[in-house]
Length: 299
Image (cartoon, rainbow, N blue to C red; front, side, top):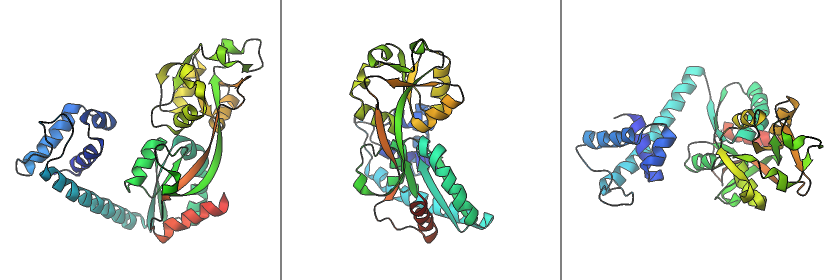
């Protein structure tokens, strides 16, 4: 039986939805269904999922397999890490799942500095939105996470280090008609008539923006894009507007790709703190704790 199929089965038990999981895996729903059927056949023609109910429900055999599958995958991942360590003379691997702003603009500097002093520690950096990063961390698939929003989790569930502050701005193309005969300062009533690009569901940027900017539902939302660079590209050559974190927006503006819009009536549309986190009181290796302490001391 393929390890990948076991991983699919574990994820399916969490998603409880073939369509949503197949979309994340970038495979067809029929392919995912075939993988489950193949597992059932290999295990002795058993039934893992009750197909007679409208709700997703594992059979008793499915629940038993889920318990063993999680243990098998954990052992497989541990074995894989140990083999990598021996191959590359690595003493530890630190896995970090992190949202786009801290992953691209905040944390790399500290990882580079730490790596120079500790060359036998390897980093695996997984770029995900805040929601997915939190889910990965809670499922013990990463050691740490970097997020701009705690989404539906409570901050008290985690040990945390504040690694940055963020303010959000509306952006538009450098030659956008909104800016004609103006000093980049306009009223929201004018701005909201133009098509708006939103971040995807699960994005920390979107979560904070919608929580702190009550007029977000007045925007003319036409697109959802899950990548900041793609948003910049789409905005820079169209009449679309969007929002970006200050650090990302200023770099794009300095490059001549976009203009930051300042609202006359709403000076700050949203702000947040960026955190580096781990599950509360989680026991970690000395090397991982060493990196945690390094961040605390240098931020």
